[in-house]
Amino acid sequence: MKKADTAAKILEILQKEYPDARVTLNSQNPLQLLIATILAAQCTDERVNLVTKDLFKKYRTTSDFAGADLHTLEEEIRSTGFFHNKAKNIIRCCQDIVKKFNGEVPRTLEDLTSLAGVGRKTANIILGNAFGQQAIAVDTHVKRVTHRLGWAKSDDPDKIEFELMEIIPKGRWTLACHQLVFHGRNICVAKKPKCSICPVEKFCPKIGVTEKE
Image 1 (cartoon, rainbow, N blue to C red):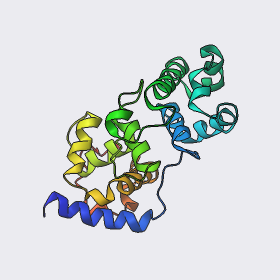
Image 2 (tube, helix red, strand yellow):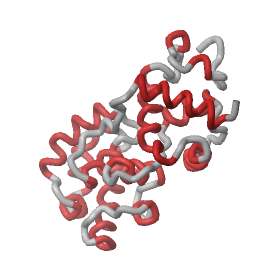
Image 3 (cartoon, helix red, strand yellow):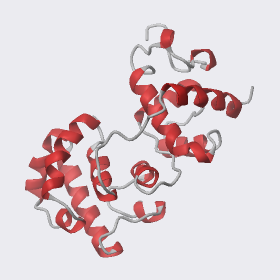
Image 4 (tube, rainbow, N blue to C red):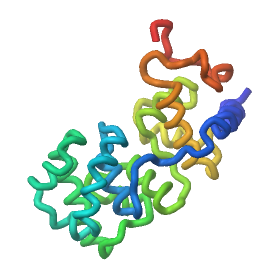
């Protein structure tokens, strides 16, 4: 069976298992999702949501973030980890948006990745969830699950994105990534994956999964 055919069967099962899969970062507009996504690096969505609950009350526009005091912002986001780099990137990113895009979060991959601290994964999350475009965002869960399924071989998330483009139908890119994330969080976890109760186990070659896991 071709890889794309197997993928189609797996995605059909994941659709039944996770019909409501979505981004779990709380946001009300593209700017908030952008900030939340930057904060989510090496941090749980739950922790980010706790931080942004107050953060978004204080900083409401790109100009607010662009003019933020670095040390104050660092303290406000400290609990998300790597707070110095995140605060610096948030301020620089929003300064770029104000300068280049009249304060509006841009709507193309090229423009988004031109912003300070924004890579393809972050850009694709914004495109897929704030602007309704089809995009593949490769986070740690998507990388792990697609490696084990044999869909991707590269260790580079950007290259994995292109590998998945060849397997997942474009009309399902955004949703499929959410479902892979949910599956990675619930079943195909990093340590001791729950293969015995996995709904797609019969299609999985379990690449990289050892007996000890």
